[in-house]
Image (cartoon, rainbow, N blue to C red; front, side):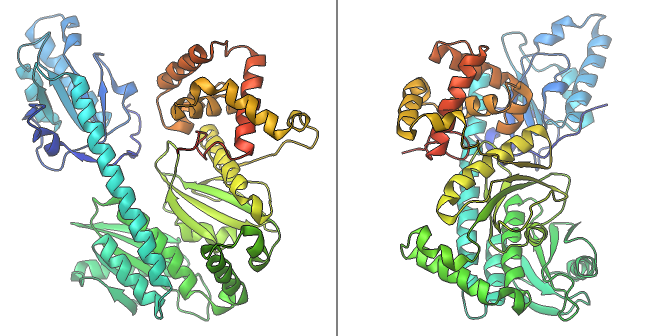
Length: 516
């Protein structure tokens, strides 16, 4: 049975864009031509590469494994049919077959098998190395990711600015419609509109939107989705189940092939939930929070605005939504009991959106269905940057352990760190880790590997890379540091050094040294 294919974490690269590059000389010889998207590249000469595929790849092969087939032409045809079927079942987006050094042409039986199983087959000419194809894909992924992050950042700023206007709900709906290139509306369970923006939907889309609004507004889930031809509908419950107010839902109709639109809609849902929520929940405390934000923007120090935030101690929560859930950020914010939330792409290796929240220390943070949480210890406002890093580290550990919640625990007052002055510890750490200073990926790998007790698999999960890449990086680190990483004394000293840098903010949230 093929393994389940996870949702790709990288922006899609149209296969047509690769075929259009004259420097690569690629030519599609079989399979569907329209709507094929590549997320990454994998090269394998194995007869069964399925265990090593994540889904969404262009699988590259020179056909070396075909030489192992015996039994005549009929056996080869059967082998290639099974090979194409397994590749499709593994979720690969396309197959690239290299001409030379083994084959002069793409085997006809492979062309027919790919046509039968709906697998795009691309001929890679003799003059194009596989590394050139891989480089082209990653260049396109990087460019697409940059465009996506720029779009998300611009949308968040526009939504925040809209929320500060005189009619904030209408302004947010208009800004959201512009940035998702679709229709947005606030709907009651009976279908009544309390505001809309964007081009009017078709009758079918409007009817489906009414159904979703009824689902999330009548005691159902906090969010729901539906797909119609050419349209992805998402609905988010905004005002909960307060009987004194209409249970409004934000409904968004956008292109189904536009994943960032879902993230942008989630940000708008949080804002609209605050805007349309009961006035009692947004009374003096909300005004004080706004005043604190204004003073920070005008240059005040955190300690100067701490009193405006109310509680003296705050807990930082980092949360990542699991792929098997439709729970919205709005539902999580409500469960945490705070309106101080922000959704953003993670700064680390993972690319899934991360929700960050400030929770008053008196409120207990517990596991929430559909989310993985990393929780800091309660700290005063001036120590929130350190708590933010600790929550990020706790989230990575939770993801690596596949557990729903991990809390950061600071060492006690009599720990080994208390025996060394912070300045001396930092100087020692910088000297010890100097060979890795120019390689943030190596520092991040070492930090995660040590924190996860040398587990290759958990480190790979935390960083979103293959376990073999972790092994290669650890071997590289051992060589650069000229030390034995199997020695527990060495591990202890390196962990002490990394923790020293983490305590004074010399490491970013992903465990890497800050960039200049």
